[in-house]
View 1: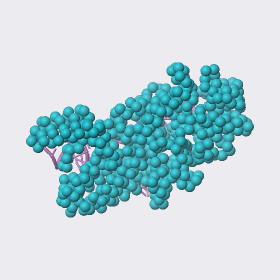
View 2 (view 1 turned 135 degrees about the horizontal axis):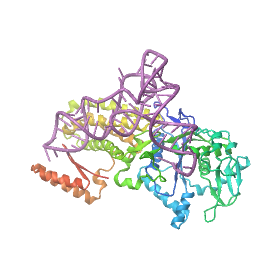
View 3 (view 1 turned 90 degrees about the horizontal axis):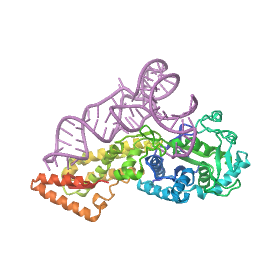
Length: 496
RNA sequence: GGCGGCAUCGCCAAGUGGUAAGGCAACUGAUUGCAAAUCAGUCACCCCCGGUUCGAAUCCGGGUGCCGCCUCCA
């Protein structure tokens, strides 16, 4: 990994709390504490869940690339109404449900190439920490118990509304909040919910019950990252009430600022509405994996800025897949040309003139990549820079493909490939020249069989039996094997 | 109703004061037995109306449209 390089632009990010772009200055130099809201594990993940996962994965990777040590915490909400309901419906218990979907979550995220966070704390394993925070809030008079429930008194926290821009007076009116006469004001929220019969519960000073939704994040973030930490992330849809309430209860309890920077990813829409389980317009990841590779999904998700809303279109993933092909193609090509390097000495004259522009393009791409990523993690712009490098690399390879690669051009070509590969890696793509060629991905027998057909087809082409050659290519294509002829031979690739 | 966000080529999408990156699609040409890939070329005055400025997609005011949140939600 890189160490800090003073030549690189300082990292700036848009802070939801201040609504401004601010330089990232970690509390502890060289070290970033980051907490991102994970999922409530009551079902499989859909594409909407992949947005923050992939986005913050890329952010984390970039921070580490820049030399920061990142303490990255992602929570699981493993007890709540939906989990309990599902358990009831299945005749199992909440643990069985949450365990199953935590496993499913890891399965999907691993496949997506999301690097594991430093820690995945679960709500039910941090009941004592939550009790302690609630107790402090009670002692300070910021919380009150009613019939086994404990509520946070928003009137006792002066900063309430500072994240979401809401005014307490308006919340007091509480247009859409069902009036609960037991509450001091309608917008007070539960820290602890008394357990109803048949519900899971934990003993507490206020009676048997379970945690409110917001308290887990406060308790676990403080436990692992400290009362004040650097970055708190999550979906834009969590700003209110979830994150607002996290701030209120944490800061009321500790008297310290909670997260210093808040980052919110835009929401993925489908059919003009948020992709959401309750609306029913979701695309499950497991389903998408049948048609698309992890890199294609990542290309789609990182093609747009993380804060922008993204509207899912029918052919959106298809386009992203085609776009990503440019990278896989250029890597294949470089590998092929490098393998044949030295075989033909021709073209050195013309190729010598290509070396310098390629070096320059490599430097430029690197510079632009950093410039974009430093400026609030502009992955779309960064990808644009990488496409330009890919194009320059292709340009350089034009003559080398037929005439052989000259000695002088080989070095900058290797350098360009290394840079492209490295920077794609920073964004979390698995595309890389070293990545197993198609043949190695398939079972040995499949590879040998395809090679056999390619050989037979080559004989046919030599014999000018193009009808047979085309039939072989067409039939293989129908089976998901794409053949590509080039001056240096035929290569093939397997679809997904 | 309140609070936020967004509006750039057919589609996706960068760009935050100096006359519009990139990708997909399309068209023309090169290459190819044909494909694919690749290269070259073509393809936008930035939702509307005012204002500030020598100069605005970029700043200010006013509209319009879409989305999110205010209930569980990435």
